Image 1: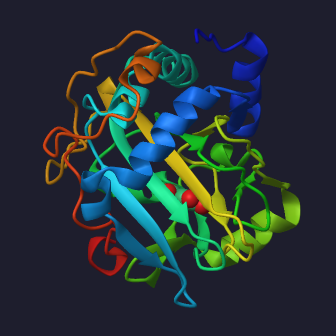
Image 2: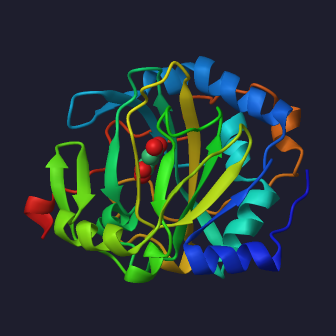
Length: 276
Ligand SMILES: O=C(O)CCC(=O)C(=O)O
């Protein structure tokens, strides 16, 4: 599948801080990604639980390198890299990928935050970073779809405060003002849709109160010139090798070799009491 972002889609991203690309991955590709997320022993062995304030857990797996697994290849596709480079405006590298898996009636909530509220502490000087959320399941308000504040990427980095040992949140006082003046958008996706959002776009998601699973794959890119200066994890620059656009389909359900992806053993949550 070859795909180029239109001028209109780029303009929407710059105005709103996000843009949805319908059918970015086709059904065969989504099936391969889903099966890999469900069955790959490396994903299973690195699954972490991120509990919300009420104790409801979302399963997450985090990895920092894009290898030859089907999900590594997804991050190396021209459609992903070209779109990210158009939106960021310069060459990018793979910063991080994550599976966020909300099980029916169980998956927990995420409170308002900016990704740059976290990534800043990894030594990325500019917010020239973004994520693409790829829906592996349909996402709805009931199963805990992402919610975003339109235009919030223009507010700069907002101070975050600790919420639990696994989550920080954007300053709640400022959030009250923001929510009184800005539109909150539910990100309703079908399997295979891609949702690109700026690292300063405020986002959150509710607990999954439905009987439907909500699994999503997030692939994050950083401008190469914005390489993280903190080198205590694997989120600093390594070249990103492009593959052909049919690489995911050709690979099928290909698992990680266990070494290439550099899985994280814990979530990256800056200790704001120490760093600020
Ligand atoms: O999966 C979600 O609902 C939210 C994920 C998120 O906010 C994040 O990974 O930063």
